[in-house]
Amino acid sequence: MREIQVRTRARRELVDITRQVAAAARESGGSGAWLVFVPHTTAGVTINEGADPAVADDILTALEAAVPEGQPWKHAEGNSPAHVLSTLVGSSVLVAVEDGEVALGTWQSIFFCEFDGPRSRQVWLQKLE
Amino acid sequence: MREIQVRTRARRELVDITRQVAAAARESGGSGAWLVFVPHTTAGVTINEGADPAVADDILTALEAAVPEGQPWKHAEGNSPAHVLSTLVGSSVLVAVEDGEVALGTWQSIFFCEFDGPRSRQVWLQKLE
Amino acid sequence: MREIQVRTRARRELVDITRQVAAAARESGGSGAWLVFVPHTTAGVTINEGADPAVADDILTALEAAVPEGQPWKHAEGNSPAHVLSTLVGSSVLVAVEDGEVALGTWQSIFFCEFDGPRSRQVWLQKLE
Image (spheres, rainbow over the protein chains, first blue to last red):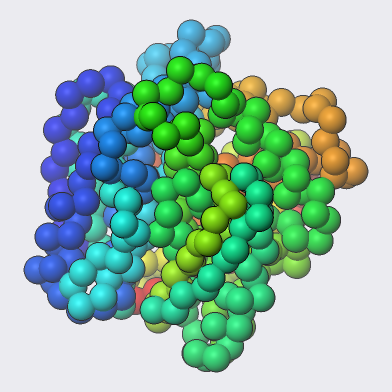
């Protein structure tokens, strides 16, 4: 298993990690799939458009609207919306790899999703054949 | 990797692709799992009930309510809700296969989720053992 | 493929199944990943914090708010919100395994998500190498 380090800089942020995943796949070579797994409960990982950064901004805006802050949460740490978004977005993506190349669509990038930053985060990469 | 072609006919639509995935698994045979991956950023794939088409209608209705149109989006193409739904629903599902047969529950079907159609779309199928 | 039985006791409930998944991985040994798959269309599976049970409560509260009951659903069985939540949360998670040990973050547990209980439910476990 390989590990990527992600340093987030805001409460909520989408960080493009496509390059790091692609580099790991290329170094390892071969075909199959890579599991991109986030070992945190207030973050997630998603695949979406990386060309226009406004898309990531709009995703964060919509997620905040879907799970608003300031509700009477039971969890005392004040980050319940981050936990909910982690479940809605998901803790992992799985991407196919052919001859060491990650198979993504033209507009697709892989984003680490910070919902309770800023923090130092990890992403685990596991190869499946 | 195999590819399924999907021709969508509405702005938002759930298209049952279970038959195509099952056919690929049967032709290929063997056991393991198949990654059903959508290489688009304004579409997704999900597993849900295929028996009553009203379920797919209700899913689309609820998703539209959760991410309403007509907000002040930054992304200029006017399809930000489609990008958000792609992240919420997800770009892939992974299904087990035993002796060439896709392992799904009694009521489960695999649906391509169009959120910005109508368009010609692709679905990638990758076998994992 | 292995099967876990889950007996849910409420309409909506998150049931921690980490121990059962870990036991299956340990018995089977080896490294790779396990697909944790829910063969139902009104339930799901997610990874989130298991230490404080208030987190699971808050997740259920937020999901109910995001997909409210009492809308004019087409599906006549009255459980359309459960179908929608199944799609939003997802039918499976994939977790890496190293030498028979499930690789989860410090705070992560695997939860079966009941959205239309109480019922007897199954979870399928499939090993991938």
